[in-house]
Image (cartoon, rainbow, N blue to C red; front, side):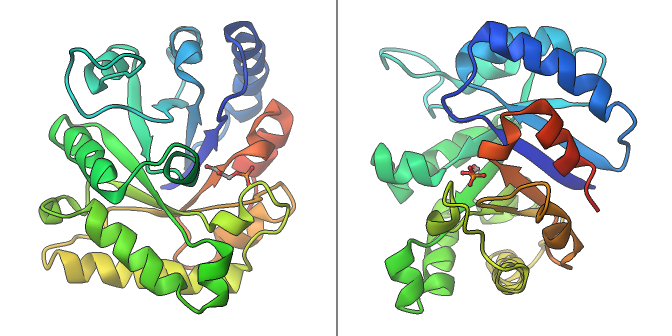
Length: 246
Ligand code: 13P
């Protein structure tokens, strides 16, 4: 089933979350052939969990820390997220990599902790503009995935991967569906190369300036198994249109 995920980033207070979810749920209640995921900030998880109870819309977090507990001021563990009904965690978003200095090594630790705890990660990968212009897109994506999955080779079916070219995020300038198709096919081959027993159960999502007008074009492409939506997910009507686009 295709996964349509909202990454709200640092937006929405708990009361705004309540208002959003109350509007959003009736708009998507008839959707059956898509998995729908909301990833609010940590501070909104509690209220979102309460409101999503009984619906098929899932709850995700935007980040986590890999240690189970202890003196890590400001961090949130996987157990804390699990208790709030979180079933997905975004790991290695480009904003975490480039604004907060997350290394491939840290991303690997976070993935390890998620996978060993039975939490499904959405690993984000993608090249920056200068890398794209230098023809390095596939190399960058391959390196990010190989390092993220280092010593986790047997888990290739237990995560989803979001291809989010950094230059397409929040720019109003999405990648073309054809480019996305090419990178996604490469990622799928790569997962089979990493794990000879790969069963093809990990979905490859596209993210970067997705909106209700272009969402259907992406979802039509053969290897696009979902979308990770930032800006256009902040309005419940707009996001519901994306969820329902064909
Ligand atoms: P935009 O949809 O705002 O481009 O953001 C994409 C993104 O970063 C989702 O994780």
